Length: 535
Image 1 (tube, one colour):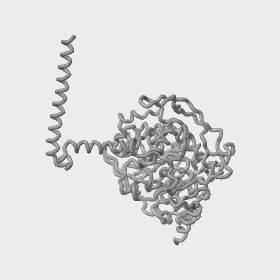
Image 2: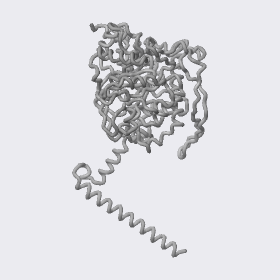
Image 3: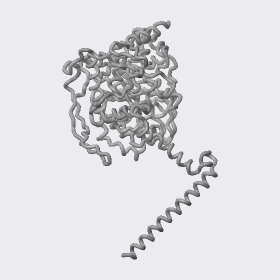
Image 4: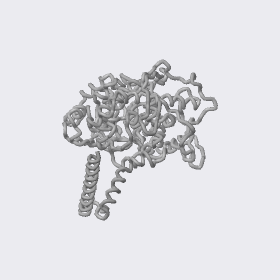
């Protein structure tokens, strides 16, 4: 036995010696190589320490996200925001304990509570329609091992609007779009998101009922259709999905698309909050499937212009809208970003003079997200939604055309209180994109533009997409949406309203950093004054 022990000891020391030699040689190589390279000054002077520095820099975002940022820090969503979305989608619960983490010394909007709130039985919503979903029940959450959870069936009210409160887009079209839910999915293209992500969203939204999904400018894919949910098909300047070989509108294809039962409306994209520009797709991403969906040539790079060449003023744009509406018989809207108080003056004036114009306006705030854009556009082009929405509403009211057009607001409206404030400012409906992405697994790695999303959401890579299990994530979509709707009715009841449809500026207060309170009514009057003073 002693002989075997001696051999093992010798082998052990030999292995250790070899490892040390390898490490020394590797260190010598690194020092020699780093001192000779000409790209990094730090490595030339500090070969080993420099590599440690670059390693720490590389893992910096993850360290800040999980360790060093406080619960209310982190962009674009704080840890608190992120966890709230994840927990509501996973557990179908949005209850928290002890107290708020909001900084009440900061300026911000608040919902006015009523001395006599509505009782649960006084809330006015569709009590008949139910949804069937699945949620997790947390059993144990130990420190050093995997948490124990039970996945169980759950039946819940859909929390849809009462039948008589149905929101109707394009009431004068041949086929109006009727909605019993106030919240839908904002534009996200197949190509930007993978097929598993789009499929999970389609099936989940369909199961939640009363909602819609927007295809994004990448065209209608079979994955958008797979769940049978109502669809707003977006048409961007490149006319993906409805273009002919020259890039012009293929009116026959447009008509065919309009006859698909799920397609309820078309949206003409003028601008997006985080991407007021045209898009670009690398040639290697344009596989045959995406090429067929977008009606382009496979494996050829695509550049989408930053505006339609078919029109360059309000008159020609409205003529284009009228032509699409007449040709298809379904509502047509526009998606836009507002940059100032005069941004929609010409459109509203023309709508009053001619009776023409969109059936709905999707107003995207500058804080909205994107798969890929540029810093200067994301940070500094376009007003945020809480500044832009009063401008749009006031301008439409000034010209007496507000009742002809529905307004869909978007831009980080991912909680019931944010949605309530947007409704009070004049929005009819709300779009959410990143909230639904987080519901199906997004962890905010900020790699949407790289096709390297580690959780299979914002990627078309077949291997990475395997991480996203459709039959599990679709239920998280249902849970996230139902939780939002339930919360929206809960906050409207606290304000003394039987339905969130009745939110008005008088139900919202604004507190500045000195503690001075102003009603949203007064703020809207001030905006009305600015709009009305322009002739």
